[in-house]
Image: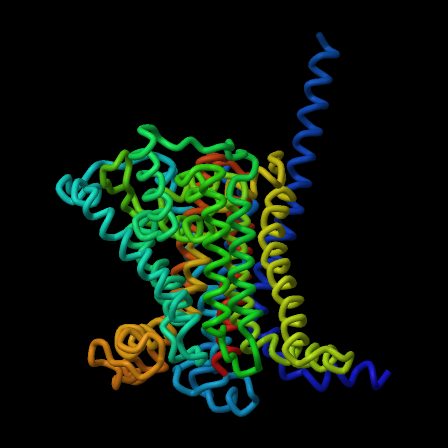
Length: 61
Length: 495
């Protein structure tokens, strides 16, 4: 276990700096990904609603 | 036609905290720059802020630009054709046979000089005309000229000039134009140029490495590569016609032409005209393979920057593995660099497709391939930004050498043709801090321009629908990744 941790911990100076750079990008990316998924759900719900309304309309005629 | 309320709500929620965090970091970073430096977080002390904080600043600026574009840029402005002729006298001068012959002869002369100095001159890359000429004056300066003045390489290409001269001679003797034996396959598009671009970058960045101190390409190797490339180009021109191969298959014409698409100047039917800057780029990517050209261009610069800093430890480690396995040092270094070069191209390709896939998650029904080609041209400003950021100082310094001692002594054998062989590069002509500001400014400006071009395309194909705003949000994500990556690589290479 300690051998597995030795490499990443020993090189923490490198990846820690990289994380510092990437923080705002990761934050924005998180917002966009979650928003996109929510938008897709919303769109599918709307499409399903529209389809059921059309089906209801066709049934009542 | 909805504007995507979800996006705006998320944007409204996310932006103020981001700005607040940035301002807090700004205060801390400016107040205690020494503490960051002491922990190895920044490499130099000549900028007022740590590099990572500049990257955060770039993120904030780009998100602000994104908001500004959505609020203020409501109709496509770049999809039209605003070309109108200008300067008729200059047009006829450019078109004149005499000028064409003189410029053509000069370009062929320079090609011959590159080959001759490479074969007959000194083996020291920094004392031989050919290396600086090809990798700085040709490869980098022509990009700048293309951005400002359009397709200048059409006039300056030695291969096109030679091809046209041979075609002209044929017409003179045979009394008719030489027909191209083969029809250029439309599906081939710009793919031959993509292959050539990968080959050129590999030759420069992988083959040219003969040690970890970047010894550079040997002049002799460069001369041989120039001969081989010229032969391939002439075969392509003989098979498919001079103009067709020049436009589609000839690597440098396609590469410089990509940057020329950002220029306001364009020759049309032999007449010089002006149109809105960036407008030509909207029709540039319709040819197959165009996306490959722009992504390879970005990937090549990314690898060059990464190899000098971010990837240097990994490359050293791979080098040791391959030498332990029995490879010679040169072959081991070339193999490990080839692998990382391929990996970098793949990485850049992946980021682009991440953005395109993201657009599809948001709900557009367009295929990923269609979206990819629709938005490919938006990445030309990024390719330019990366080039400026990485090579600005190289051009400033090496062009002094080019126009003084290398021109006076092209073979490096002690001759002094113009009396400037005793000159030296003045490294104080621009300060390190000024170079770093140019690097930062070019990365931010290039990505902001890319956002604007992508936004304009999104308006053209999606209107003001929800798809448009989400496509732009994903474009923003890709731009943020590229800008942060660019600044990170620069900081590592400069450290």
